[in-house]
Length: 312
Image (tube, rainbow, N blue to C red; front, top):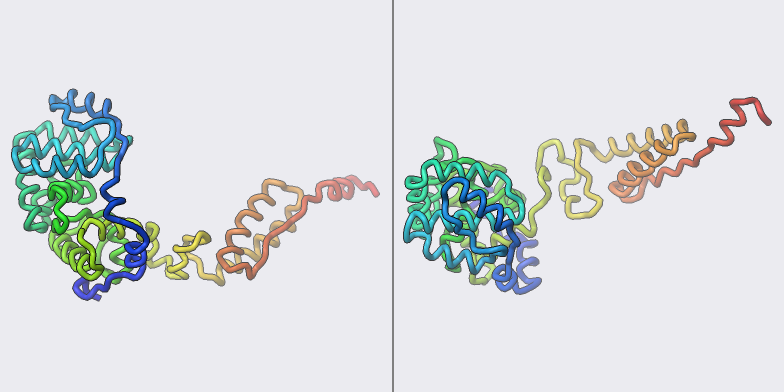
């Protein structure tokens, strides 16, 4: 199925109808490690542009409205967006800071231009930050990071055409029928197509904001690996708490359970073994709907000790 024919997923419709999703989105606030950012930016000769110990979407939309004013304004938006996404984590933060610091004038101008372009041409903005025949323009800042930047550079415009694209979103899109969409490292053409899907689903759902659709795609995303070829059996069971990952068919699970039961009977003196057998047996039994039963091996240490020593 081509992305142009993707229907609004039922579970996304259900999610949209279950609350005031726009209000929830606007209330997002994230606690960040402000001191870490202050120190790291100063270490590389960059101004401390972080907004505070907490950052919310309204703050970032306000910064986004100024991101096209100058390279420094664009860089300020970038750091606050990355902090918002990471929370109190600082994964790869210093590498990103060092990369921008090493070529601040050029990369600041690139970010400013991408912010402006992304308001009208999402594919062109995406290609500025990750050309199809090259890597990321800023080290350690791939699509999952810079599409957040492009999104907030839209300053909160409801129909902003540059939405966030991350692996969770991609999994939701693949489950909706876009099978050839990759897990990551998307092309600029992919991003344009995705933008059109989001805008189309917004219209189909009768809501005002594209970013609410994106938030829903995060919310309904299946687990990582749900559609790998080796996990062909009972793929849809990921929605249940007893979802089991692995390259096993239901017949394989029945065979494993049978052997676990046999081993439990043969190792009746081992408490550790019994605990493992019962735990694994319970998971298999749950995954098979209770059809194979629980493994309940009793400890019989006393009986074996007496017989081994010839006592009656």
